[in-house]
Length: 87
Image (tube, rainbow, N blue to C red; front, side, top):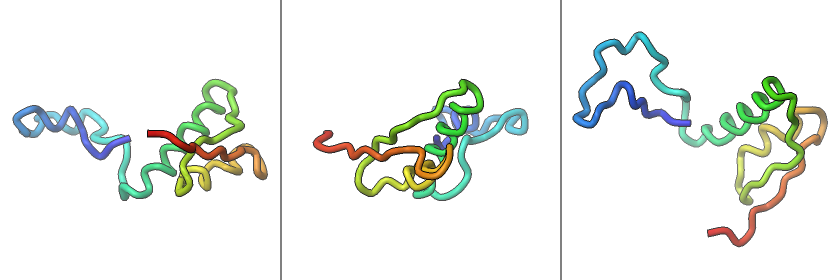
């Protein structure tokens, strides 16, 4: 997810002339809220498009994304696993 639009911004930072022909970015909102919104979109999309339900969420200790998806398939349907010792 990003606030940046590759169509609108070229290498020389000139605006794209036909901006109304595309969706400018895939996220609108604060950067701090991008993680939970992204997690929700992935979990919801997998169920709707592929009939797949995630059972585990790997995240760090301060992950906001887990709170958004822990009950997406029902009460406490997703388990949180801590990512420990990663670089």
